[in-house]
Length: 318
Image 1 (cartoon, rainbow, N blue to C red):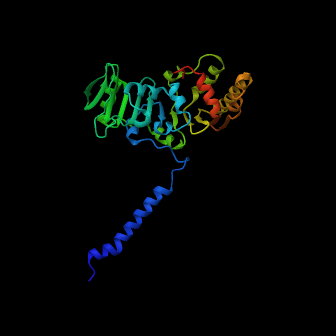
Image 2: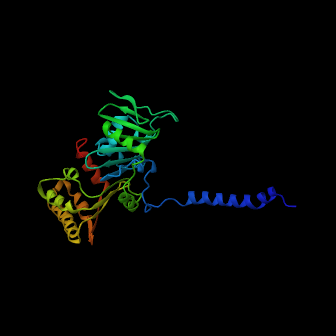
């Protein structure tokens, strides 16, 4: 008589073992491709306000391993990262993994996944002048009445104005936060090779205020008025490669934008000084194409030019 135990040992157990080995082999041998979509931490996605117009992603863990990371920190080029580090005092190389920055046209919010305390299983420990602990909506806040960081849990925090954070916590508790559907559709089109990326949907009056208002750049900025959405992705692994996509209101507007990009590159080439001839390679690398209402563009910046340019900037210039 065959027992249940013998059936398990002779049939089911070997099958389960084979499945387990196959699963491990796939995880070890099938490394993610650079062409795979970028992965956004689900714990951050659910915190994005649905009215967000601009969403910026910073994959801090990966950026810290790139050749340009030291320059980015020295020159404080990634402002959201620098602000978060300054207000929390955490070590980005060891404790900070991923950040999302949201902007709805009026308020911005920095969302972060991090190890807020060097000791595992301990509550977040953030100290600084004028920083106090208080509670709102069942969440711990550290800050003051102007700015604070609110903790969703021990590894997820939200940084912003205290008044806006209180409203955000109310919405979190009510279950009314979450990434807009447009961004959910667009973000899989950004590949994991890009450590900094940005998506927009339309341009609010507040966003237009950041665009140049004088010179040739202002003429270019006016072309963006009809933009319905955009993606920008930055690959920092060697030469910096910036790829951008914009959806315009009409095919004619897309053609005008593509032509304007080429015109700006040509003008920059003509005005390049002898001390900066290396920039000619940058301008010549521009590729742009319009197809229907869509415009795609890319540009490559050699590492040597990145270093030269960054070292010439005063800290915080960008």
